[in-house]
Length: 316
Image (tube, rainbow, N blue to C red):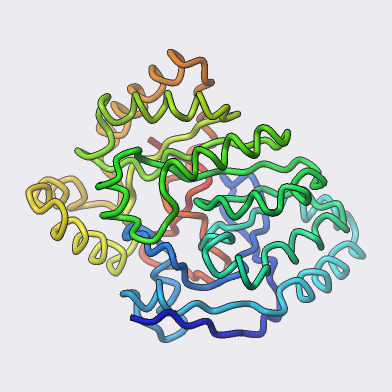
């Protein structure tokens, strides 16, 4: 399927995040749809709100908010004029639904334009990405107050990576990204997410990954077991699982039969295993306020699907 890029006009780009467990109140997503094509991405469901399919359309029909920077500046100006406006804005999160540094950003530079606005108004920000393209904006990140970058990486295994994230940057590129950001003095860490049951949750997978993350100089590490929030996402993930690891389909079906999440004892076991590895490599164990999820936190227009999915807080 050929990838198409369609400009859309955004009335506003700061989306309210209502979840009390989130460490931010506003999010920005410069693109709808994501070329990385991750099979577990909750944001596939948001395409249905536009009357689009959740299949390969999500990966190959990218909607570009071409006026995002202008809309962001206008919105900030209005909000900053209100009482306690700066406090109400707080820290803004970029890339909570789709990757702000997916391939389209190399040409469009919409994310960079939004960062320029945030820098101009002194707005703190965090960014979640899988892409080394973020390094091109290191100059702006260094000028953002209280800037943090979260690089998502769940395996070093190239076969697993290609099976579930077909067009995302290679694990080695993401580690290089973390190292490059840290060398520039930027607070950058890793989301080990989603941890895939029976594939990436064992010591043979987690130990070398944690070691590589530590060697890259990650400032923090968080982990999250796979969560399948909606029927379309679950169906798409199981299609990929059946294609690449059919012997695991029944085990996954039992694990996720009654909930979007794996059972709590399973998650607790993985959490303990990861914590032990983090300590052994000199990395602090980090557990934010409990909130289920392994996909990115949804934008406000994600509406209320079967259960509200989030990524930036973890409940293992």
